Length: 110
Image (tube, rainbow, N blue to C red; front, side, top):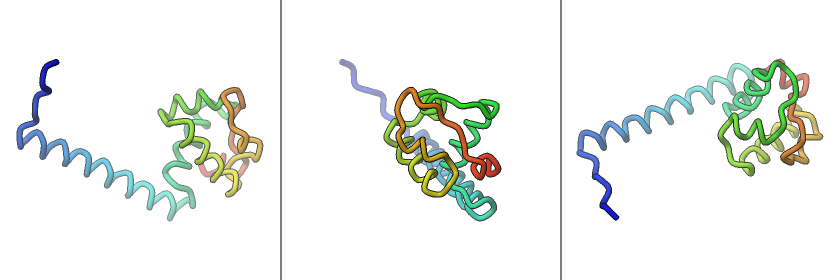
């Protein structure tokens, strides 16, 4: 097995700069969404993905694949959204085959 190439100092600074910028953009978007719409960036990601499905239901595993999230992350996010009225309560029993859709208040937020 060959040893992986090490980054040069310049490449390392560029990489860390990219990671920092990416996190700063996420943080800024989250603050703005919370302030302007009362939803988090994660809420928005779920709702906008469902909306791009033309308002029809998506199976939860399709939603998870579209978001590129782990099952536990999506399950926890949906549970938070159900508690806040952004998703129907049926979604609190997430499984691979359940259809995911938004609640009326969630649809207006996306």
